Image 1 (cartoon, rainbow, N blue to C red):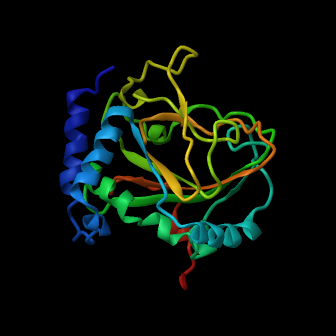
Image 2 (image 1 turned 180 degrees about the horizontal axis):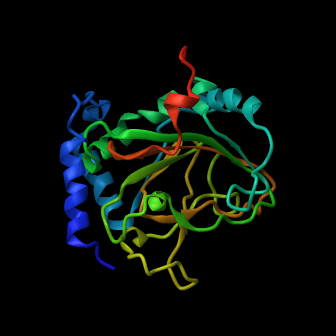
Length: 249
């Protein structure tokens, strides 16, 4: 299915009228070597994702693990959240230990190229997948916005490996190239898929149109991760930070 021309024009109007209505805050993404940004962007455009390795030192991962572990409570409420998966929402109001993930220069350098100025943080969440968890239903993150595909992404996400990601401990499953699919297409067993295997301190960056999902954890150890998600400046974020974040924060 192609996007009707009048809808494309409407999206372009929003981009021009709203996205540039306010002065943009300069991004620290500008400090990243342009050649590195071009390489990362080429992978995203080709596959829908790129793995950025070793962005955090082991000590930084330890600090994050120590800060978020006391916040972990019950497991998910449904199969999508995960019956054996713990999640922490509204993280910005609960700890400052994870702020460095939100505006990492390597991530912002990609967002600067993909979206209009003043793009927004949509959510920041802890995800801990325990042994015995089933694979998550495959999905595209920006499917919550009812705009026909194929189209340009309306959001993007990072999933940070605080523990190493492997193919058997719940490493995120990705379907390369699925960011270009139309509305009528759904994943099948014949579609190529890969697990985001990466060392702790790394992240996988992918556009919101990419089909993906948490992997099954068939190992004997839990897998701790954080996800920071972003959206274009004229869209509603998934978390209402103006309501969920205290005035002091």
